Image (cartoon, rainbow, N blue to C red):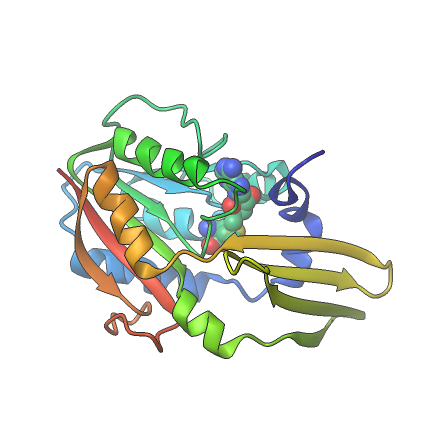
Length: 239
Ligand SMILES: C[S@@+](CC[C@H](N)C(=O)[O-])C[C@H]1O[C@@H](n2cnc3c(N)ncnc32)[C@H](O)[C@@H]1O
């Protein structure tokens, strides 16, 4: 049976989340420019690049490669961003040489999708392998503390002529947030399941893989990380 992330990130995902746009991508890249020392001639990797909105902005500054598993999203990325190169791959086994990148980004909760934590750690180790010494890894994840406090169990959105129902729960073992997305017109249901890593867990994983965590922000405007902030954005330097 295929994993949820192999079927969800396709045409329907793009239709349901049209607001995940370029303006937000600009904010993240500004944050990176302001807080990371990126050398001239940098090679950047947008890990789990989706339709390439961050790759597009990164490519205005540095040579950029976007990697993703979804053929559908990569097709859009290719069409809309000719400045970056894109490749299909799995974040658990990166098809790059050791130390190839001075900047690796994993943005907008593109992490925590697997059913075992060894696979999550494997991703961070792969990132550490492909990041050059002194290079930067930016991990932008949901803030579990904030999510637990603000979870909306049910909502409906009208997108074009379609009604999309979204049901959110925390798994019984409290390790995952599960979102069920139902298209009312077709009755098709998709699932998103993300591991609820705390900021401390992520920091631990980065350190264990060989990064020193230099910054921890709570949103793209550089507000400090707190229980109330919506994001956990960690800047790790490869030691
Ligand atoms: C929430 S989307 C974010 C995409 C992009 N970073 C953005 O902000 O628009 C998560 C992305 O992770 C990709 N993905 C999921 N599992 C993956 C895997 N094992 N390896 C590589 N990419 C994966 C999906 O295809 C999807 O494009």
